[in-house]
Length: 158
Image 1 (cartoon, rainbow, N blue to C red):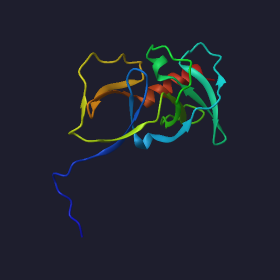
Image 2: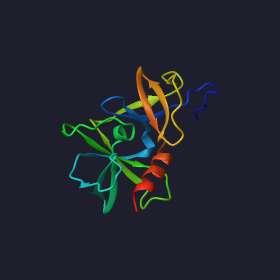
Image 3: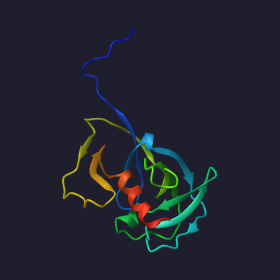
């Protein structure tokens, strides 16, 4: 029988989701699947960050550009873009899943108190879907607030 040390480190797995300016950091448990980029049904709403929708496992999911949410203009070229299927934990949406556009393949990181710290800076506005800016393994990343992201999406989708 194994005993657990009282000073054992608590670790969590996360994924660094590549973006052009600063990656996103999500808990690995929130990421359901990583897809190659595919054709999307183009968005017809005023929200430029809502790129459109796509089919996934007999569901139609919205595709979001977090860069556009944050005011960064999106590149038109495809390159090695991916779609990250994320569980947003919202019961107000048609489905609790969304697609987030990534500029490349996410990287798995182990998160613990030794390699994760909240970066200094001004707090994000209350209505923005970002909870924190962090530094993980010497890389600055943004932590999306999935609940606020779901609420933002709910405002622009029927």
